[in-house]
Image (cartoon, rainbow, N blue to C red):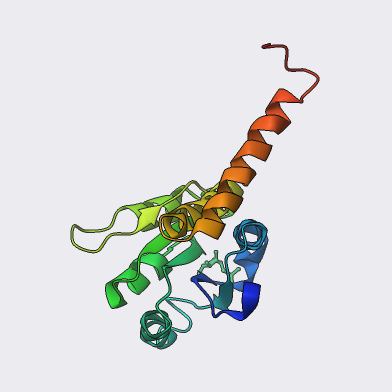
Length: 169
Ligand code: RP5
């Protein structure tokens, strides 16, 4: 768990299998960069279904601002967590071997009306963007996160401008 200034987690990061870690690591790096405290769990909608309501209750008890949930294939984890809690769920479709993550994307994005999951891009970009989105939500009330997010984006812009192959100016 990353815990800036001794506080409890602000964001939960969960994934359906340890094999998702390589993808979800990008989310952890972004949250750490932005000083957002997080906790990480492996929870499977299929292999450990009994842990889902328990984790949903924990997310509410800790007042997590959101849960970032990554899963691949028949990716039911984000949707099932969303069914158990009002804590916003940000879904990351992990790239599957058989169908390149299109199965994961469709499983996560096609929620029935009434139980939303915010769905991000397949794979590493989705994991990083889910973390940036979580930080942006926190930034609406947390000035320190806002400053770090603004600085992150300024660095990103500068990296493009500093690229020797960039001759736009
Ligand atoms: C899903 O099945 C996981 O999210 C993972 O992406 C996929 C494959 O899991 P493993 O068989 O690698 O554990 O539940």
